[in-house]
Length: 116
Image 1 (tube, rainbow, N blue to C red):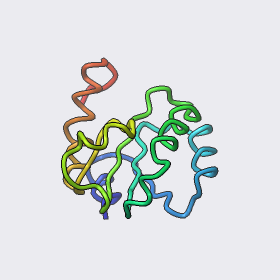
Image 2 (cartoon, rainbow, N blue to C red):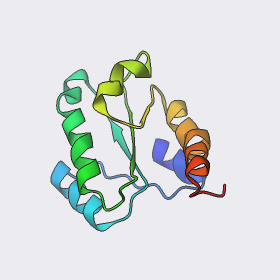
Image 3 (cartoon, one colour):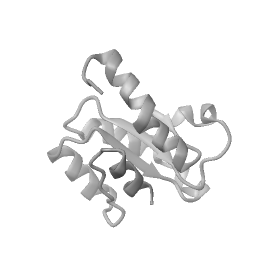
Image 4 (cartoon, rainbow, N blue to C red):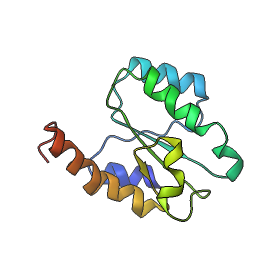
């Protein structure tokens, strides 16, 4: 499971699969979350995803929250998903790990917020 791999990479990852959108927004408005990963299992789940991502950015107490999308519905090049507004598009679990192992640390170094 991806959450276990992210935890093994040194991140505190939690799975919120049983929470609905409103409960997730409550979590984001009360807890500092650096990265929110959204798994998209089927094509019909892409409908409304850009709005959800916008809502996440609005509700989060972290103005710099990063959003990673992935899942079995994500295939092809990440460019075709830019309209969703995510910070990272992962076509596989390995792509997601790249964000945490390399992409995130590079971003944080550029912004001066990470010493990893």
